[in-house]
Amino acid sequence: MNDVVLPTVFSSPERAQLQSYLTSSDANGLSKETEKYMLKGSPCYGGGGAKGIKMAEKFEKYANGTVDTKSLDSPSKNSSRLNYDRFIPSQYNIDIKSNHYSLAAQKSEVKLDTRAMAQQDELARACGIKVGQKILTFGTEAPVCDREDFKKLYTSKAKKLHTGINNKRRILTSAEQVLDAPGLVDDYYLNLLDWSVDNMLAIGLERNVYLWDASSGEVTSLCETSGPSNTVCSLQWTNDGEYLAVGNSEGVIELWDVNNKKKMRSMKGRLTRVGVLSWNNHILSSGGQDGCIWNHDVRVAKHKVAELVSHTGEVCGLKWREDGGLLASGGNDNMVNVWDIRSSVPRFTKSDHTAAVKAIAWSPHQPNVLATGGGSNDKFIRFWNTTTAAQLGNINTGSQVTSLVWSKHYKEIASTHGYPDNVVTLWSYPDLSKIIDIPAHDTRILHSSISPDGQVLATLASDENLKFWRLFENTKKGASNTRGAHSDGAKQAGAGWGKGENTYHPYKRNVMSMYR
Image (cartoon, rainbow, N blue to C red; front, side, top):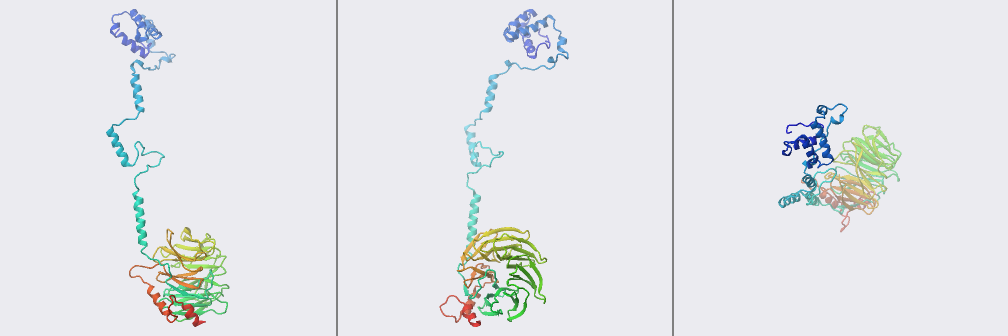
């Protein structure tokens, strides 16, 4: 019995159980009949139950030789049930309690000893995270550190230090000098003030043009228009300061040799007043009330060489870029045009302003940056990239913008204003933050011009006052300074005007009495 091989009539568990039983000591020396009855009653194989009886009946057929072991070992095609036998493990070989404990232990948290937990807490505190918190997760925010943000701390200190450096530059809020300008025409669309490279200031008062030498304080009258109703509407110095162009209300432009006080020529042809002028070498551009811009070549008899037509309102702002490549114009139609010197069609047109555009200024630091300012219904300063035609930024000033002047020494721009504030405001660029507001005049400021050294701004308002503001003082060594020249000029011009007066008034007390 020990060497017996059971056929496949018995299932795998049955074969294993029977083989174990037949090879045991209890089954040695017994007959097959006896083994059959012992098998029926054996508790190991069902305890006499249905399972044990069934196994015993199978064994009895095997013992009597009535089972064809060959057919059982090689089942027929019809007996597909015996082709693939299932393996069902015996429950008696499985430690159910042990396996259940292992499964339950997998779900429970791993307990650390006191030493390991203390180390884990220290590591979590050093990393700024909580114990058990996931560091890398999908779709969640990064952990927030509870420690102080040193980056913000150092940044705030740096800003304070930068502000302290800027505070060393002193900006006076009181005018350095004040002159009277009686008879000034209160018209927003005119341009009646310009400062030459020779430190000569030209101003138009009604029918007269006066010159004030800022170095000596000497005041002279240059010219007077013909006709009682013909007034000065615009004036502009040439780049070398030798000649002055004067436009009047009859549409005539006169060129004057300042040193010899001689009129060089008159350029006629316009039917409306010339409110603005701008030089580009030998080309003089003029803007008229009819909305047209004329380019005059002052070297030839037929001076009109081009006519630029785009504005539908009076042209009141006109400025050539320093290199002479582009011309910017603004008008009472609320439009800004940028013209290429090679074309009579605007390079681009901007309609963002909602009021007349008189204030126009090119940046001396970035040649492609243009600043424009709108009137009382707009109050905006806008900055343009003339290469891409994109708007770089804007400032809502809250007041009518009458003029814009860039600083030569700082990345700043000064704006003068009319209603309702009548102030001079200094802005930083490109962050467009306000540096200072200076209450300048009692009424709206109409015109402004910068000194040749780029330090002093002259403003002319409808209150008939001409004031000088030291906004951009250059503190570098070797830089020219006009403070002494202005002071000396004030003393010389004011000599003999009366004692005990703090301001001098050359136009009212000297010039006007001499030439009227």
